[in-house]
Image 1 (cartoon, rainbow, N blue to C red):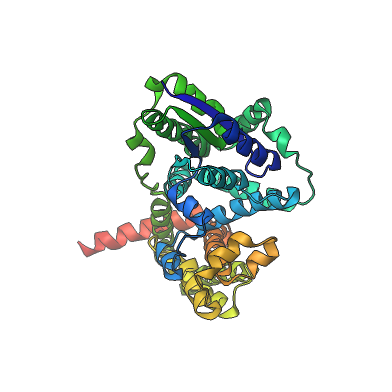
Image 2 (image 1 turned 120 degrees about the vertical axis):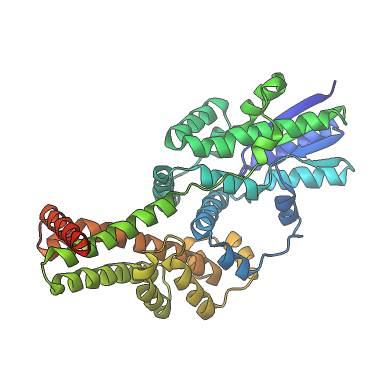
Length: 398
C-alpha cells in the first residue's frame, strides 16, 4: 500500500515554501502531487498561450470574469504584503521535484470547470453577497495586518470554512467540497502507480481530503464533479416578466382613457431611466463617453429582451476604442493596485460591461417602483379601468 504524506500550505506563505522543499528532501517521494491543473501549471511555467480578446467578448461572461480577477487580486495583494508571490509554494514543489528527477502529478480540477460550477451554483442572493464581500475586502485589505502562518492552523481554517458556508453554501460546495473529492480521486489514482506520494495542497483542503482517503467509498463519482452545470434561467425569467409587465402597463394606459400624454410619459421615462443609469454606471467604470452613449441608446431596448444586455454593446464600443491585447491578461494578474488594473484596457472593457448591465437592471427596478408616482395615477384604478375597457373592446369585435 502506498505511503501518502500530505502538506497543507498557505498559498502566500514563505514558511510553506521551506516546508515543501524540506519535505521533498526528507521524504524522497516517487511523485509530488500538487494542487494545480494543466492550465495553471503551464501558466506557472510561463508556457500558456494568451486567449484572444474576441474570446472574452463572444463568451459574454463579464461578471464571472470580473469576480475571478478581483479574487486573484485580493490574493496577490496579501502576497505582496508578506513578500511572497501567490502559489510560490506550488512553484517551489514543482521546481524541487523536477530538479531531483521526481515526477510531478497535477491533481486539481481544471480551473475553468471550477469557476463555471462555482458561478452557476450561486443563487442571486449569494452573488450579491459575493460582490459586497469583494468590495469590503478590497477596501480593507491595505488596513489589516494578516498573520499567514496563523491561518494555516486547522482550528482557524475550520472556523473560516464554516463562515464561508454560512455566507455561500453553494459556493463552498463548488470551491471546497467538490475539489476535496476530486483531489482525493487523483491521489488514490497515483497510489496505484507509486509507493511514496507527497501531496502539496492548500491547508483548507487537507481535512476534507484526509476524510475521503480514510473512507474512499464516500467519494462521489468523478463524472459528477466535472459535468457542466446548466445556468439557472433566472435571467430569462426576469427578462420575460419585465417585458410582460411593461407591455401590460402600456396597454392598460392606452385603454384606461387617461390620455396619450400619460402613455408618452411612460415611454419617455422608460428610455430615460434605463439610458441614464446605464450611461452613469458605464462612466463610473471609467468607460469612454461613446461607450456610455451606446449604453444609453440601447438600454431601453435590451431591458425588454432577455437574450441581450446593454453592457455587451457598451463593451464592444469600449474595446474598439481601448484596443485591448492578449498581453493584457498577464498585466491584469501582475497589477499591484486596483488603480493599475483599471488602467489596463481589457479590465476596463470587462468592468464597463459588468457595471453597464448593473445600471440597466437597476433602471428596470427603479422604473417599476416610481413610475406610478411619476404619472400621478392610482395603479389599481389604472389596471382595473384598463382591463375593463379592453374586455369591452374585445366584446365589441364579436
